Length: 387
Image: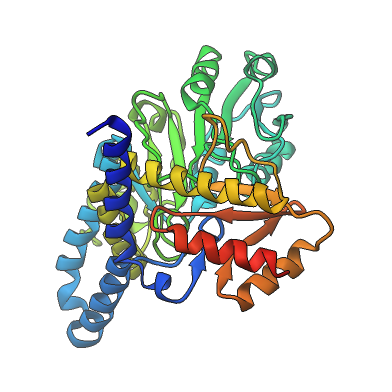
């Protein structure tokens, strides 16, 4: 077998295995994972089990849930090459970013460096610091591409955080995290990554990329429900941040309610101050375990294969593809324009044909997962052709 045929077989096997566990594929050609993804079969089953146990067993089952919660934390750690102690279970990406934004010991004159095409979740927490004398420096990108020299020039001795998205939400440009992290650390700044548009389907090792902090909700590529996500904190970075949102579960002796002593956990779990979204986290854990079992290398290959197929077909259709789909910066997101048509009307038309896509920044956007196949692409193209 040649290398190409071996990869083709791996892609086929991965796609088939995941598609069998995605009930949504029976009805929809679903190309909107960058917005809100359908949940996986294992996530659905975890929700069903939790509901049944909650109804029939009440809190007698809580120790079992706690064990499964620990398994979810371990699965998340495995996904990014971290320790379970470095993982906090959080409601969403915004929460994870704010744990850093509100946790730094800011001084007037400090600054944050980010990009000008970030999703608002990675902008407003920094702008909110203006009243403390903190400047937010938003570096222009070229269709999502980062000029590393320009980024470095924006950093100085007062830069406390460099915060970027791994993949740009609008056009899917995937950034070189290792290079950006190097720049951040040359200025002794915390390197924070909004990973929501790639986590789970592209390989990531937080040690190799020297990421200090990371945040991602589970309702996109991780195929979990909304309101359940993860945050990562490197141990050295954790020591530089004030704990916020402190509650009964933030202390070492969390189960001893009669002992009032502010002995904060030395792990990322200190940010889990109150009760858990137990159903959501158990479902998220089930999906992460599924993705881990398939392998992010295989998932990434399947995604890039299907987005390449879709992009070729879109170009043949007369679409103008805006994403860097022919470079190493490509991802699962492809943004494109169809001259002379209204993107919102196109989305509505495609929905009527059983095809789900979206619109961002005046462009149409598809975001394919590893289970999308050639039949889905055919339905997409047929729907666009009939607009």
